[in-house]
Image (tube, rainbow over all chains, first blue to last red; front, side):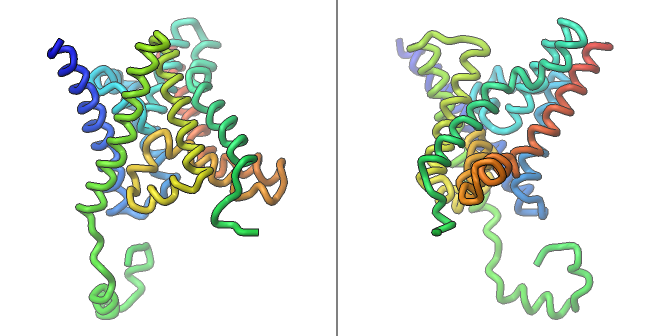
Length: 127
Length: 150
């Protein structure tokens, strides 16, 4: 019983540590270069794609769970993973695999953003 | 004082300006990013745990469900104006997690709603997130093709 709780807490701590570390690395990059938020997001997403393409991101996901999948590099991991699994089914799968694995996130972002934009008014533009 | 045209200024003048500008708190910045980013990821881990044990999801459905919940939370907090306030202190801690991606989609959509539903809200929705999807699809497809021909 105690061991169960301990392993559960350990999972949360690992997610916190790895996720926080990725964000802290991004903050260091922002502090010492002139990269804007958009470029940081693209860079970290591409790092995720390349690492998973080399098979290096999967161990991090197995270790940290949401700590590795929630940062934007996890989005790149998802794209690469979908493409790799699609490639096993042939050419068509290799081309469609990336976006179909990311479809949940992209669809959710579009649907919820549309709803929120309908419901709320932007604070910075008072018209 | 950063930028490519730094060399064009007189060095004494740069030193003079720097003596008045407050020092960048690198360590404090990183600590905030670590804390907030870590908390968001821990929330994601909680959602994973919740969906796995209450709705008995697994594999792809579990990952998708976690992303959808976090994206919903990100857009809701953006709509309420809370996320921008978090971002002012957290920096990369609020940009890099998937909630930051949701914020980057939702924020321009809200901002440009006044310019119409087609050329305002819908067209400007992907002004920041568009490049992520463009280069993500390009790189992902490239990985897929490499694995296909290997």
